Amino acid sequence: MRLILRNLGFYLLAFWASITLNFVLPRFMPGDPVSRMFAQAQGTMQPDQIAQLRKLFGLDNRPLWEQYHSYVKSVFTGDLGISITRFPTPVTDVIGSQIGWTLLLGGVALVIAAVLGNLLGIVAAWRRGGVLDSAFPPLLIFVGSFPYFWLAMGALYLFGVSLGWFPLRHAYDVGLTPGFNGEFLSNVATHLVLPALTIVLVSIGGWMLGMRNTMIATTAEDYITMAEAKGLSPSRIMFRYAARNALLPSVTNFGMALGFVVGGALLTEVVFAYPGIGYQLLMAVQGLDYPLMQGIFLTITAAVLIANFLVDLVYVRLDPRVRVRVR
Image (cartoon, rainbow, N blue to C red):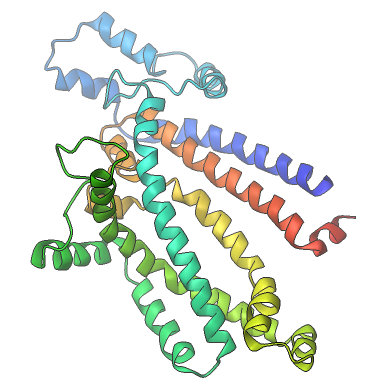
């Protein structure tokens, strides 16, 4: 409990710091979103309308500390403001309509990459010197060195444009009515293949290499030798003894990656025009949409902090050494 409360205090402090940075950073950007709206209106807006918009978006002439106080108060009351680029839609509605697609894309890619990468790492470390241990790590690391967008554009051109196996953009076909039916779900799955595949190919090498290195160190422990001396089957020793203990660092990595899933693979979403948080963040930056940028940054930060806190709770349960060190 002492460890949990101490970590909770750190996370609350980090959340306050993120709120402060979230308030300050957009205001350092050049340009004024209200002036941009005035320019797009081609002079049809009146001065009193401009003043009301500045007050609505928190960009009036009040002192900065007053704007900061109003912003913090609105965050804790769940009011993230009105989106400028999608006026007059609230920021919470914009994020709510996009975050599901980001969680689907990032979650599916993360689970596939983590499961396959860890399994490959376990088998490669257990059969050291084999084909899997010799060929796969450098090959996957080489593939993982490519940027997301480069691999995404290559997959889009090869499998989408040239071969025509998969659709080129969006999360489902235009004109298709969303619903939990076979036609819609299969269409969503087809659109999901290419963007998820590019993320898996880039990240699976890191999962495999991390598990392989941890497994090699774990197989040298005395309890592995004892298990072998007892005559236990190799598969039981590999999974029940070695892999179970080598999995702890992967739990931490999975929790951190799970938090960043909310941020989305921005460049991948842009290449495939996938309607996620990353793509919406790009649109907000281009439109100088302060409230939407702040809302998305805050959502990403909160997701990362919550995921890491949950990992701490799981770690306390899985690793007794953590509890012993705190006493």
